[in-house]
Length: 517
Image (cartoon, rainbow, N blue to C red; front, side):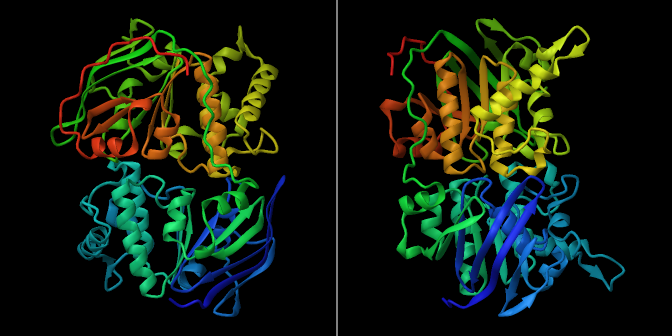
């Protein structure tokens, strides 16, 4: 592996209205190595990468490529210099095929006259095979799950033969198997001399794959070393000024009565079989139940069924002892079920609206008196949730698109909480959130559970499900593969259940009293 510096950023400063994202940052990218960049949400990681990729221009500072000063006024200029990027927020066209998305703007043509669809499909098929992705190149991206879309983004970047490849949270929606495949591709690229810039919040993953690490905090570099010289506590200290990696501390309380019961929930899959295969579960007031499983296990589809988003689903949902007959999303929210979706950009936020408007849009009726909106009470409630969730925003009237990915996720959570739910469904609530933000969000979840809220959350992070859950449900192939109380299981058993899971769903366990924790 060569230690040559192929790209160097010097004195990078970026000022936005109301905030300074970068403050004199120096950053080096080495050839044939994985250059890890970490920091809390809002630390400036994505801003720095956008400057390198030509998406943003620095207010001050310089970029040197192969020792020469260069200007990157746009993404086309960065691409000409061999710089490619996979953004944290997916940038795909859902109404176009996988192959069309991979080659958008760089279409393969016949003599420059028309697009050679056959050639594009063959090249796309080879890229997908490299990533062990089974979908056909002609599949519409809108029909893919978010993790599959992430793989398409990675394939699109690989198709450009970049010599500097920026991966911003590339594994946030991938299963453990897909992560291993990606790591194999990264090792292959390193051997070819490609410089990888790798951003992730999964710290153990960084220690494993990285060669060099740079830590950002509040727009400044707080540490830069070879990965052989660091460990996870060092990374955490550099990120947040503390070595603590604890998730939410347990707030001791008794569970209340059963608040949610799902019985024999079924959702047919396109092409045959079931995406949700006769799933039954229960949730008690004050209980946090984690649903663990790999991609394709049917977890997200189950939440969609509970929320009334799937008209073809069958089964019964009971809330507080009453069967829900209204299958509309609005009706389910009104009855007391709130969903935090996995894809915040597509389903959780309206990017052109402000922080305040996004947070209150699902609960406006609670601030309405007769025929007018009590704006003062609305804004006071928004500020309260912004404070409780520790959202980093200078003004609640700022557009939500100006926030970092993790802070946007907190806005989605706040929007759900403002509806005053009895049951909160959280689909990958920590996706794109750094370790400090995770602890804040999980603390709020524990406090809400102590107040009697029932929380059902989906995660593919084994550590999260073990730390946060009172009870764990494992799903595989659309079915419940097993159910365990947290105190009666361990990580190997949960992994084994998720890998097996070919039996029928077990019956709902009796709702026996639980001791205070």
